[in-house]
Image (tube, rainbow, N blue to C red; front, side):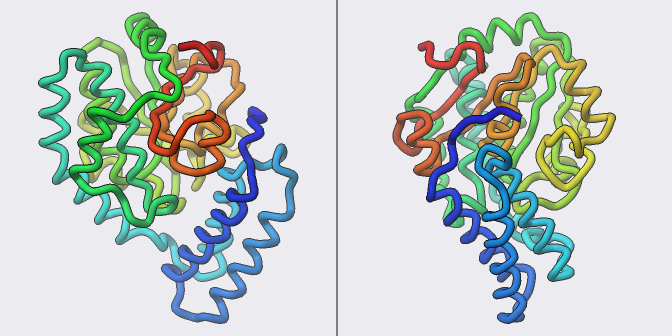
Length: 293
């Protein structure tokens, strides 16, 4: 697990805000909500930042909330609604892609902007018009597109690490574009409920299984290798190219000795500082080329 030094005071406050929001979805019992928040404080304060990045703490908090509340998936209805709304936008996304001068670049931009559909980090998502404008015009903070295009042209096996519900509809465009280039594609989703992250049920609902082979991490969390299933670890090892979506996968996988490209928008103060760029900028980065244009 790479050591990024992203964590700032905002991260801890954000984790506690997310814990309280999830607690309110999981139970209407105010005493239980307070107990959940208290336990979240203990989880956040139990590890040094370099030992457990926010993504790992978020996983631990969410597992605690489900166990304590008895709610199997507090975000279930919110995830379904996010997927439905994104599917309504899909024809416009497809039109942008098909009309683009560079379809691969358009697909990449669409996929990155889709990560802004994050009910946990952004409870009020961007509007339809805002999303389409960002796809067309959002600047890149770091852009290793030419290297990505080169690696895609050489890859026979590609693994896409998915992130949120809603966002996975945007990822369909990227999968379509990758599929045109002949590679065998697998998509990994979470193996169980984790906030608004996509699961196998969500992937099938939006039709990802029609475009790629769908696997899971093997547990209710992001790719923390010691917890992942043998199937996921084998897919990760065999992939010529890994395309990783979102901040959580970035925090966990940065520094791995693997041909990984990270796709994410900047959407919080800690990542603004980390990339020295404004919120809303797009990031397409591979580890060995960090800092290049």
